[in-house]
Length: 217
Ligand SMILES: Cc1cc2nc3c(=O)[nH]c(=O)nc-3n(C[C@H](O)[C@H](O)[C@H](O)COP(=O)(O)OP(=O)(O)OC[C@H]3O[C@@H](n4cnc5c(N)ncnc54)[C@H](O)[C@@H]3O)c2cc1C
Image (cartoon, rainbow, N blue to C red; front, side, top):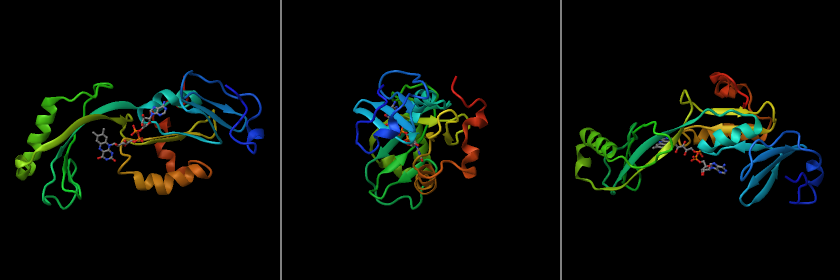
């Protein structure tokens, strides 16, 4: 990996010197600390930055150790069903039933620990549909227009993991399974913290230290 930035003349001096930490994985997306910043290898080329935020969902488990962070997340498969557009039925979101402004009703959600398998389980789809009909009988007359399964990014206690690497300062991990619900907190609290001095005491409860060892093996 080159230690010299070629993106612009202005930042060249900051990147000179020897890498101060070792790249622990090869191939696309490896990252290494160089001088006062990071060089991130991507499919589109090398990106240089003073800070690196790992926000790659389940991919963080592989990327974290490259900067000394253990990210103990696991895939949790969930199924979602979506109905055709219906007249207003639900004025407020419920835990597993929500109607969008356009009228579709989102029916969720299952939770299975099946590794990275995202295949659709029809028995689960039927169970979710039957449950929705019990709660809201009108849904029984609606057509399901889409159903799919996808993977949540689950930490051992279900709460977010926010941390800065102790061995590679300026490298952070940000991960959670409720990115939609927490979008405002991420935009208004977390992003400004990352742009200034990093995580302060307000984020301490979200450190992966709560699970035991922090550093990558
Ligand atoms: C069934 C289901 C129901 C859900 N319901 C809700 C809900 O009701 N409310 C809520 O708030 N959230 C919900 N979520 C979760 C929400 O969708 C996630 O929190 C959100 O998608 C997480 O966003 P993310 O950007 O952290 O990760 P992701 O959406 O997984 O994005 C990570 C990205 O990083 C990329 N990537 C991975 N590895 C690498 C790499 N090495 N290099 C470069 N890029 C990489 C991936 O391709 C992906 O594009 C649900 C999720 C599921 C599956």
